Amino acid sequence: MFPRLLTLLQFTRIALVFTAVGDGWAAMLLHRRAEGGEISIAYAAAVTIASIALYSFGMALNDLIDRRRDSQLAPGRPLPSGRISVRTARIVCFGLAIIALLAGTAIVVLHPDQWLSLPILVVTLELIVFYDFAGKYLVAPGLITLGLVRGVHAMIASPELAVPWHPLVLMVHVTALSTVCYHLEGKRPRLTLRHWLAVSGGLAICIAAALSVPLSRRGGSTMSLLTLLWVRPGLMYVGAAAITFIAFAISIRIRHRDPRQAGRQIMLYGLLWLIVYDASFVAGYVGRGPAMIILALLPLAWLSVQAMRAWSKLVELSQRPQYQRAR
Image 1 (cartoon, helix red, strand yellow):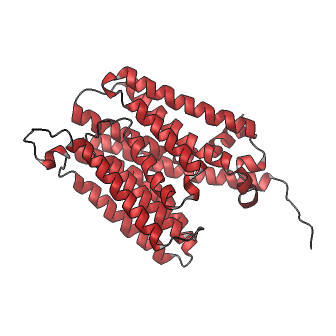
Image 2 (cartoon, helix red, strand yellow):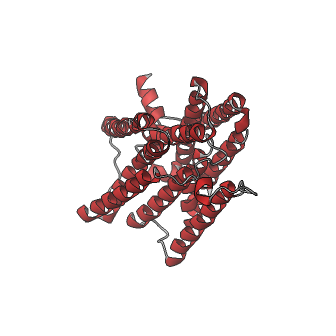
């Protein structure tokens, strides 16, 4: 059972699931801070389960679709190596989607005022399916979709965008990170000026659409734009986190002569940095205590990545060597 469990965890890329959990927890805390009210254990559990199921579904579906490609480029992965069958992989994907929908339904039942949470969760599922089936082959739309998945996912626990900057920062960070690493790793087709402009334009449209939601509540109110958009001194924490990561990414690029290796490292640390953004928002808007709880997910995610890497190496060593006929 233990090897099978580890295979399943590797198939769903569970190591980085803590980044999705951090996004959900931060959105939940920010929403409750803005709207008032307490957070029940059942509500927190529903948000956590939805985040885990959505993330795992996306990773599993991606490997299921790419199984033929991975058989040549990454034969050690669970599907190409035969450690998990295609039938089992399909059952896992379907089960994770159902679990996510049930968790979204539980959120609405526990908080009927958040009835939009379930439709937003469905949109997140649709974005994941679109990216895995088509988006990743369309370059610019795919890069924007990656950011949208993160941003829309953060709206499940905060459908009214009480603090709109949280999903926007996650969306911009993931899109920019994915675009830069795509370029550094030299993926095909190569990025052109048209692609860079398309990604920038798409991001601008998404940001404008998101900000229009809180601005539409103004009506005849005399509230200032800064109040409506929840511009607070706490945003300085987020700005400091962004500047720190940019400097860190530049240092990685300088240290590595191989741009592909630099791109892979920047991508890993960039995904882990999402937890830092979550903690920064919570520190600035809610409190330092809850922020430290979210920040504790960072070492857990890092240790999980290292553990899964070690497991992958052990699996590769345990497999029979494959020989090719000399030509």
